[in-house]
Image 1 (cartoon, rainbow, N blue to C red):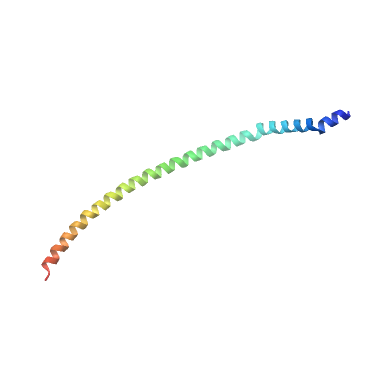
Image 2 (image 1 turned 135 degrees about the vertical axis):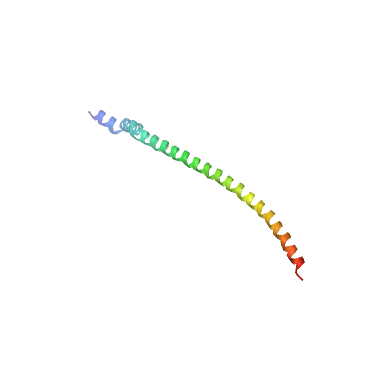
Length: 91
């Protein structure tokens, strides 16, 4: 009997307890952790898609902005010509 108590409370008992805890972790914690990580992966995928959509919209806005600036340059040139003509007519 004393040998059994020594085995259970000694290194063999600690080994059995460690194996039991590892089995419990594998059965209960790992599935929860797996589901959590899969959910995070889906959320991250949605965030990447939203970021790509934002970048695409930014590129379209930039093209529109560049076209507007180019149009303003042409309009300013026309205004300068008209102003020069007005100044020429003034005494």
